[in-house]
Length: 307
Image 1 (spheres, helix red, strand yellow):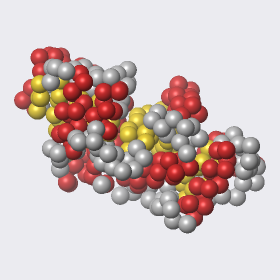
Image 2 (image 1 turned 45 degrees about the vertical axis):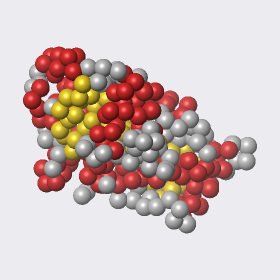
Image 3 (image 1 turned 60 degrees about the horizontal axis):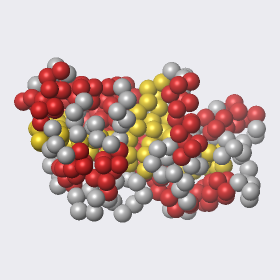
Image 4 (image 1 turned 180 degrees about the vertical axis):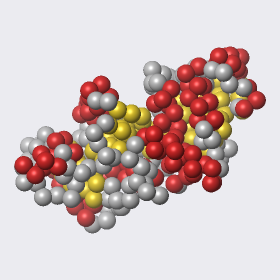
């Protein structure tokens, strides 16, 4: 598969994969929201997924009707307890009756408790991380930002796992050897700035095969990571500078600000997904648009097929 360079192209590639290999099934925890059902219905009509909807059956059926969908196209599991919705939905995935675990209207803590449950959850033995992925007008590639939503202040080992998770995701979208930029405020290693020390160590880990299927460089400031002219002016000789696919942020504060700056200060398509678990996990906000939810579903389908 050639490299996917826009999120609209990702949807089309997901359609092709599903036409050739079959649809994936998404299990939605507390599927009691019209906008969410609309996104799932769009993905179903596009040939990407079938869906199992967990929640208060009366409310779920009302949302299906309001979204202009048909009850007969869905598997509905009646569960009125919010605390149990996540467990029931994730068990569908861990038991292989579904392929993707998706958040509906339940609170994030209940959703994540389901994902991390020792008996029916999706623990993988690795660090689980989040990735925002952006299609930004003016860029010829998708930019992956990790981790801006899940791990707060990761240590060196966790950063290595976050990179590997994100590399695996990028490869599912056809980026054969992703370029990874370890972001910092400066381009030089400074003992007084711990993230620059981590960046230097991560470069070595990449060169020695501890992080696979990618090229890692850093520390790099944001301008040098994504703009070739900026890197040239600063005389940075690097296979990553100006060409980064993946932006590893030093901690959640920087990542959250970067991802939201992209969303609000540029013309873009943006969605997010949790990676590194035993199956794709879609953690959308209740405020996300149906488009963002559709993009996250398509990404989950791509990861499921790649795995």
